[in-house]
Length: 75
Image (tube, rainbow, N blue to C red; front, top):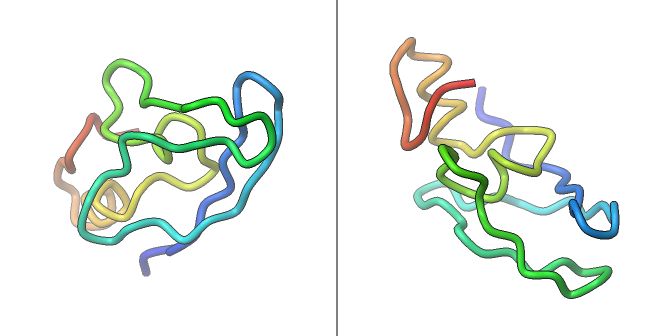
């Protein structure tokens, strides 16, 4: 089962925001709702949810469930 939401933690202000992730694309930019910092994925990650979220993006979740690789390195 794919979990559609993830809680992002901003590395600059530690603010948390829970959002619905896109299911068919990676989100490369994210504007922090608390401090307005623009988050970008860390090296090796495909999206901000894989870098700063408590749940990885749907393509990675699907790859983990199917034993394959997704759009970025598996966790």
